[in-house]
Image (cartoon, rainbow, N blue to C red):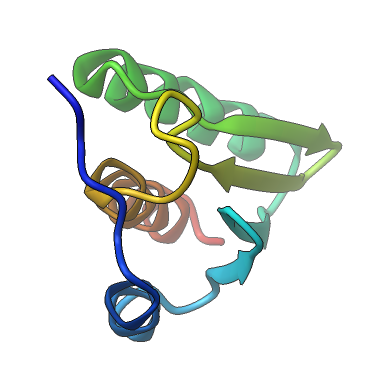
Length: 99
């Protein structure tokens, strides 16, 4: 079943509730610095579990203790609630790890 795209106003409102996230075209992006490499990989592991449960997967760039997450619902061609929901979960994982 198709997931509706968010409007520009909905995206803006969602980002107000997602500190650290920014819009980049049809994606939302967050970069986070973790205390060390092990903490960064632990966050990636937890996010992987969340992504599998949601059947929605972020693009993740790992640079030692710095992680960059990109979210977009590629099948819909833009941003949906799947992206903002997972962004919230990612933010919680980052915070719990000290990022």
